[in-house]
Length: 453
Image (cartoon, rainbow, N blue to C red):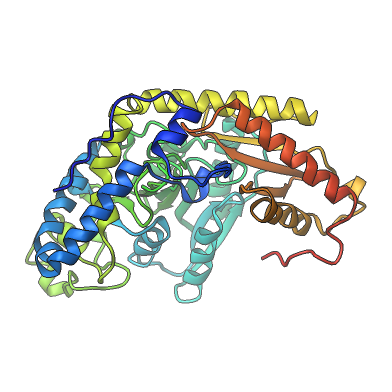
């Protein structure tokens, strides 16, 4: 097995970036929240695993991989306060959302509750599901800034409204941390309400594990959860279904290679999952499933799902070792990133003369309003297209990628705080965005607006 020793502790910021990450010279990595990245020590370990798998394909895929998979599940579970038998690994959070939703049974008049801040792929999954299942969607409109109390009140009111219309609020979907604007959601309080109301919940924690502390997840006890491992700092997105709570976690903040997510299903709910997506060799028909325990079936079901490169799953222990030895542990990482997001966002707002979105609890995102308005551009309906034009300039001409959206009548950007950044990187982002705003004011976008879906 490859050595995973990542070396000794390294200060956060520029030294961390140069010593441990493989970014191109001159590239500004400001968008960890979308696809994440992982350190060179983990990259080297993954390449050694890939070499070993090619040296003895059958031996590695049929036997060695299963041992490594078991070790990864055991290493991951404590981060969620869960048992190893309650977590399985998947390629990404979208696969996890589809796995859970397409295993559930919906009846006439069933309703899926979700918020207007829902991640786009989750929204499309619900829409697709409604074409083949007797289920409809009820969306709860929220606009930031908004307090946690207001979110909870709107959620409770939506439940009562659905019931008053003679329908059944069977499933609810909500974030732990939003994709845009980047803000933490009161997921613990929403899970409690779902349990009280007999609604099942699904938390999509794409920005969860490694971003916020989820070691209490097992005690809060959502019914399902999915999270990406290749970022290890996006936050949870919850889906609630008839008394059960599901959580989706992506490991983009955990600094595991892309193509790795964890699905958490507590033992009490594992009987609800009969098939993977796609259905593969672990599947057993109903009569055969009755001869084995749900716990045994659930674990074997996800061991081998089609032939893909499973080495990202096996890199979880190496990523955790890096975060412990080089970074000083999860608490130190969180504290640095939360403080950087706060200070960096405040500094950008000072340079812009605008404001940074301030939530009731911290996360690794800084969401800042741009010094540009629809009024000075003389537009009303083209805001989203102009924002996308500005956003697409960042990789093409500025060696970075900065998410820019038209939100709540204004232009906003989102910067991801990470251990390889400092406030100086946020200042660079602000200076770059101000140049782009000047180009927008000169109407350089005219005749060049991209389509927005």
